[in-house]
Image (cartoon, rainbow, N blue to C red; front, side, top):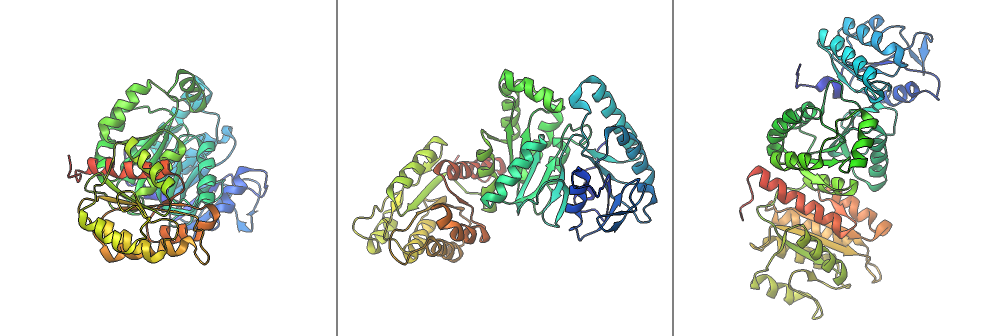
Amino acid sequence: MRLMNLDYFFRPKGIAVIGASNDPMKLGYEVFKNLKKYKDGKVYPVNVKDEVVQGVKAYKNVKDIPDEVDLAIIVVPKRFVKQSIVDCGEKGVKGAVIITAGFGETGEEGKKEERELVEIAHRYGMRLIGPNCVGVMNTHNDMNATFIMDAKKGSIAFVSQSGALGAGIVYKTVKEGIGFSKFISVGNMADLDFAELMEYLADTEEDKAIALYIEGIKDGRKFIEVAKKATRKKPVIALKAGKSESGARAASSHTGSLAGSWKIYEAAFKQSGVLIAETIDDMLSMARAFTQPLPKGKRVAIMTNAGGPGVLTADQIDKRGLKLADLEEKTIEELRSFLPPMAAVKNPVDMIASARGEDYYRTAKLLLQDPNVDMLIAICVVPTFAGMTPTEHAEGVIRAVKEVNNGKPVLGLFMAGYVSEKAKELLEANGIPSYERPEDVAAGAYALVQQARNAGVLEDE
């Protein structure tokens, strides 16, 4: 059963929280508390005992709610889940997220119970996410149907098979200023799976990149078929766990996944255009890059106010199979005309530590205008001269990008920790992702080139 318009999971007009609670020690308390902020629809608590939950009139059964309910969040003890699904079906609920655990991840009996839940749901035309999951979020309408903190608003749709790891990554990204458009914890994937969610997300406006944490895929053929189409529209990045024999066993016991051989997964990802991430940071670095346009080639220009970071970034660019651009002689001469004599005017361009915002502006403008350059990485370390902050350097880059406006991607590498926080925020607000490590900005550059290849816009091949 496939129904690819899944808006009712992410833009529901009515949400029922079955198991909403007044007890702060229960998950139903956190889920309902988070959803009280949702403004695009009504949220109804369902509780068999309490008449009021967190100051809101409660209903003993989802069928008692007088209005239509698009989405149900089920967070009741396992023994009540089956009846909750029946009640939702009779109410005409379109989708349900089952947070409750204790199903397929526990063994064959649990898998049998999962199948029964899906059969009941499909009988009523209802789709399921979960069970054994954290829930779902849409940051673009403040819908947090989970029991964890709000993710920062952004453009990455993150689908995770592990709820706890997904939650940990949400906390990590909030701290690091990385934004998600959606967070979807799929748990055991008894019904909706990676393929169907990917097919839906490929056609949404606010999701610029799709990041997947995968332990196992149940229908490899369907995944490849959908991924081939999705990756032509937008990037899909996969972080696959369970590559080793030990990891595969752990994945199987965790979500009941069929882990399979890593070589098979690797071949499937490559065949379908899915970008492979090796680590969590790798996945996030790749996904963040897609606020920028795709490059026409893989020739990278690097500008910096210190030699070391430029050299390290050049190493990482080379390691990823990209090329340092050979600047035109005209570009080199113009750089020489205003940069200090000690500056290195060949790629990487080292403007040295005295570089001000105006130098960043003029250098970025020249490099973006050079026909031999497909992409620019702008590096800034802590300015050591009085009166300078990284903010003026960021402003210079932004000004150049706006003036040239030729569709070449620009990535930032502002390596000054808390000193450069405002500069990074400024870059991000203008759609320029800013990284803190050479290997991370190189991962972003690599991802842009790979997706340009998927989309058929890479000209130098």
